[in-house]
Amino acid sequence: MKNSFNARSTTDEVLKGVDLAGKTVLLTGSNSGLGFETLQQMTSHGAHVIAAARTLTTAREACAKIRGSTTPLACDLSSLSSVRQAIAQVRDSGRHVDIVIANAGIMAPPKLEQIYGLEKQFVVNYLSHFMLINGILDVMPQHAGARIVILSSSAHRKAPKVGIDFDNLSGARNYKPWVFYGQSNVARILFARALSRRLSSNGITVNTLHPDVIADTNLSRHLGLLVKAIVPVMRLFTKTVPQGAATQCYLAAHPDVASVTGQYFSDCKIAEPSPAARDDAIGERLWTLSEQLVSAHGGH
Image (cartoon, rainbow, N blue to C red; front, top):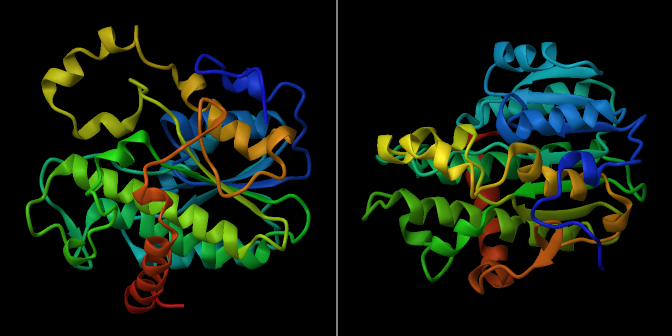
């Protein structure tokens, strides 16, 4: 699969000529950064977007800033109870969800935080999206080109060598912010691969991606003052938000990738993740554990 897009391609460029009229998109993290850019682009191309954010107020504010058809949705990814409520609202809306974009995430909080005894990034970045996506699968049209797009990061390479340290998911032993951020992103890639295998016969594609380094997103809120001070300089060498969101918009809507599934993308092209992120045995172990965790803490 070849295309002319690259690291400098923008959302406008990858979506040129794409018509999403009649499509419904479920988008997490819709209120800022890459998510808000994606919200603007999906609606401007005709889609109805269920715009999820941590609070209903934040989601409503994001929707109010744009023209287009939207439904604000509260989905606090640090609470599986909130995720369960969001699933119920999506299912009760009467809409088929044609596209899911799992965009939300947190990056490298300096001090260990735990939820349900698990390190916070594992829950917010991975486990809540595992629950959300599995919870709405049966309102996605079968054999009709539905797509699931899951953000990851090249920082997945900072994860432990084993990919997922199943014996330290709490982070209690030797917490390192970037290692655990990397682990949550390995989990997202493994999830995408495992889900693509499960959905291979019904026409729903699942892909993941690295958006690259973008200076102007909320992900940087945990970074130190020194890093924040050089953000103006970083902008000279990093992607803009429209460039950063291009790959996820490409995967969500471009006809070139309508039948591509189980892949990891960077700059709108297939890339190769780390060996651990390609270890499907680890992915299956993670899937089983995730089902157990959702059952224990999130309910059904």
